[in-house]
Length: 253
Length: 362
Image 1 (cartoon, rainbow over the protein chains, first blue to last red):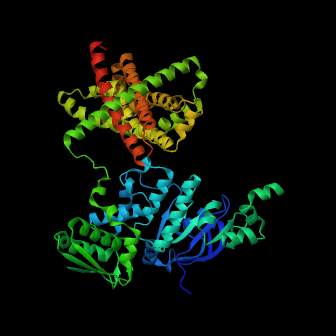
Image 2 (image 1 turned 180 degrees about the vertical axis):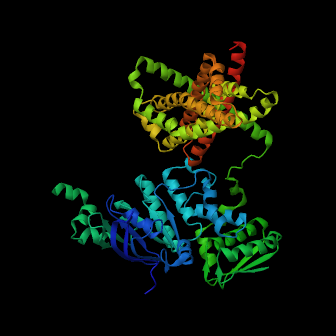
Image 3 (image 1 turned 135 degrees about the horizontal axis):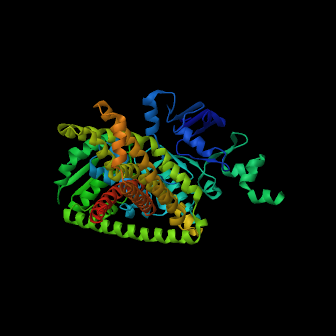
């Protein structure tokens, strides 16, 4: 079997020594769209922030493309970090730069490409997400959906093998959210990118996820793993059933 | 010409190719042919894709033929995902050019200054109207916020004000003592320090501290609230931001500056005392001269200046914060503009006061 792109083993995560998640283990394969789902406050974003090394792990191990994010020395950490891109809920674009300049920034720092080449690479990334006509716009001048797509283009600047997306559809209308879902599928198909996506948008989950795990605040960890349809149709766990069929559960109660 | 792509065709290799080969490609023209040999490519990234697109773009514009050996399918895949025509030269006019011509920059700066002045005036009008509305309905003033702002602007600034006041008194005493000693009248240093600090320096030094410390904080705080849409939320709740946010800060600043100024003056007098004690002037004599030099007019002038400077610092800080743009760097710009604007206005008003009190002979 091919080596997994993301390996999480017995991860414990939390803040100030207080655990929010315990004993979380899963693997993500190359080209897979893996979704972390769960209700608000269950630790989805906490899991993501610990996997990408923004916060120190309380326990366990995370490997991205075989490199440890923590506990393996600075070189190994740098290799792991170069292997992934991240987009945040708000897009987190730099407000003082145009969309094109936002994408050129990592190319300027991490490559020796001449300015013309950097610019063309950045324009191609914007073309990939359908924003090339808006290259000269500032983040404040574009819509929420465009900001998220521009953030994906920036995350793609250095051609990472893995993209982590934190709540990509949050705050978007259904049409724009569906556009974003199609973009994720297209990037996976054309560039073979592996996605790990944190979301609780059911429509997106069913549209794009190959496999997902569900986190639960009470259990402080994973309560279900599988394809979205399998979780919806076969899970006996009441929290999973409530998540996938909230109205049915409200009616019963 | 043949351009051979390496096995690992990523940004590092592409950077070398781009810098080495593109100059030759730029010299090609109609009738020439370029062979792009991508047979060996096993791994490639966005930079390699950009190179393929750039070569096809050049071939189209310079009208030379391009042939590809593409055993690995890299070129075909790139051309399937990206259309070279989309990246033709004319499409590169999207990014706005920052105009570097000095006359244009001067013109833009003049327009900005004019807009600033107009906005300050509009804010002054709004604040005045808000103050009058408070006289009619004093209950609208958020007293708790005002006291909190006073605590942060006044009480928290006390240590730095005392230190700078003391050092100013010390420096002033040293400078004047060395000159007056030549005439044997170093005891008059006390008069000079008393009048200088009460009438001018106490308010001025404190205003500069308040502008740097509090004016910038007001601008950054209100600017961040604007970015977070808190100002919009207040407006839609029917709470005027000027009354709800700016007035408590302006009033706190107006109260804090005279309060700090009095402490700065007394710290300065102690600094002067320290120097005169060292040069042999008895402390009783020093205090007698301080008291005799002081007039009610000098004290009142100092306090009038302090209240006015406090009003200016509070208003400029709040005005810049409330009209900051909705970006992170705009918050920084608002804070900087608040400090610079306050200092300019403080200096202008200090000059006006100097002329006014000279004309009034006080």
